[in-house]
Image (cartoon, rainbow, N blue to C red; front, top):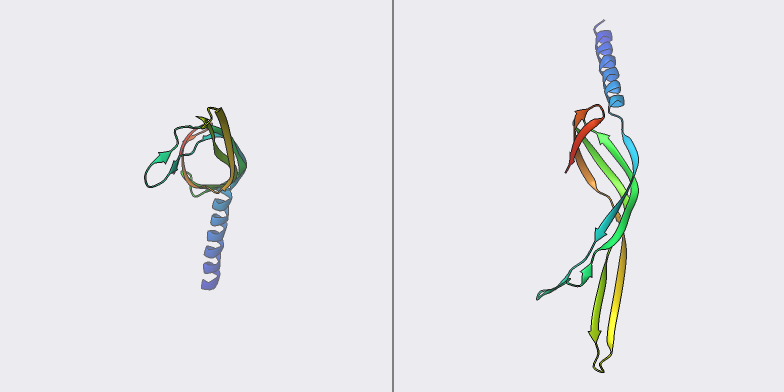
Length: 131
């Protein structure tokens, strides 16, 4: 008789845990965005970045959010991002010829951000912060 009551308690705990896992289901989605990037080259003596301008880029990828409880969740993504710079330079050579150059560099990165997210609110209006 005692073994049966322990089995019933274990079964009740398993059922309760199963319901709580279904309550906090994972959320999968897509992310896309716009970013502006620039660069600055540095060495031990000086930095070079005065003629570098913002370069427009994008990021796109998949994301997943794993709730921990009603307030906190863990979010991660796999994003393809473009970064880089645009540089213009004007100079005159030894013979007096004037040159204008424009250099655009686009770099492609795979980013995997790991984020803790706190969400507060109810209904359709929610406020969240990430770390």
